Length: 260
Image (cartoon, rainbow, N blue to C red; front, side):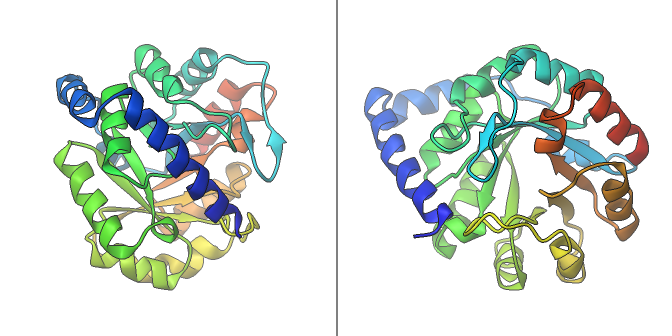
């Protein structure tokens, strides 16, 4: 069983427990009453290469990344450091996140917020909307095509932007077929968590016309970002490099200034 398979299995089990605690009808009412956040897509359309700065406590491949800083401090550092948007990892068992992290980020940060998780059900879209997300992640490798298409449409209906994540040309064809407007190329293979930093470049020519392109994982600093910008990428999603930096605000500022 791959790492992704294990994460999907635990995600589904945890989701079932949450659905018992808060019925879907109640959650939907909360979601529809929640104020709209700034547009994630609009933030990525700004001139230059946009930085999506991620709050990420740990990962299956690296273990603990940063445990000495509070989420509020990190998110505020990202906003002050020039990030265009903030990604909040909410998966608990493998990444140390929580849905409450997204709620807290929405209270202290005015930037668009991406809920980064392994979405398998519309209920998670309602959770994201109620907690203050502007956008959600849908991973092509994690979903049957019909379910992916259904969740993509449901997210848009709820006023959420969708970052559709791909790893190869076959998955990119799927993203195109469902009308993805924002496509993320994850340089990390979620089956074994290996990184291939050239993956984004290989897939650029096959991107849907007009789609915003986000490079994810393996971006270590200014040189990587500048190279991606020159290739035509619209945004970079950076977590570990910022979280592990001695001064996350300064690291984000240097990246944002170099990309602007």
